[in-house]
Image 1 (cartoon, rainbow, N blue to C red):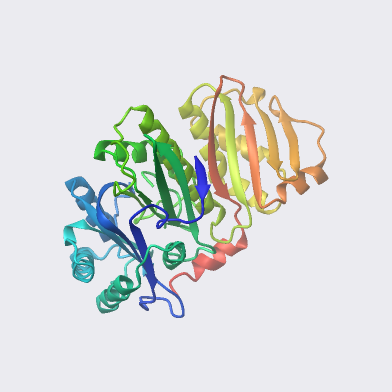
Image 2: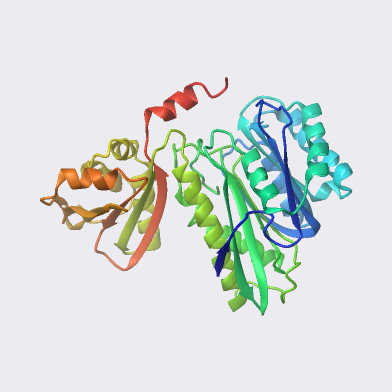
Length: 407
């Protein structure tokens, strides 16, 4: 496997574009298009929040129908959530406008929206934006990057990655882009991720590869504990790599699943590290656990602890907060056997051994915790299973952003 430059336009046959439609923002792009020259097999996972945005309902309907997908239209600024039948109708209007502009079927158009909940979309601006997108689309890596920028809300940077892998003697490319900074506590999986591949793969294999991987990637991140109404991860496969069809359970399936995992984990970590107001990516690893479930519960509980996140922001080795978070995680373990370490590029330091503090240097700990990426490693000494979760520090910036978000 090889990481390459690019995102959603890295795979054969995919084009993208960005446009400024003026939906909420001024002076920046706020609409993106992903387009395949040929219809694609599609898979998706979506928010488990009972309150689901109109685009989520639309996409679930399209994916469940099993038809081919050829385009994705995404807007930022307004989430089109809690907008009733009118909001769902705007999804239909968007799909029909895209179908007309791109000369494809409206049934093959997926929709994504992110932004303020409860506001109706300015449909005239939306449809005008689609016309711009259709005229500007191409397969350049630059257009892929511009599309990744257009879907940002409070994100501070675009998030994209592409990889290649040899499958059946053919080079298969997988590329993706995502957005997410606040309202991040996926549980499927505000976050959006769109992944493209030129692989020939069965619908069952594509859906299972995505659904199985989400549990260890997007569902293991948290910025603020809020599961969005709009969370969506979609994968499109157009088959232009001309490999033999990938079937679930085969060796070639495992290669594809590994490539997809690299994309998903990278995007998930980029979202976590770009949390609103964040200064550091915070990773928690639970190691030597008895089961995967235990390891995931412990790791996720640590990154979700607001007290721990605040300590990371203060570069404070307040290890009691981590042990406390582990204790209420729902996982069973012996706290008197836990070892805890902090790691970053500045080094590694042990903080507790068998549940009590060791004689460590606070100065050295602060130096390690001052990095832009910090890891806490909790060793429970019960087995050989591990899991990782990702979040970020909690700063005053998070309050500043969200106290003002609608304006």
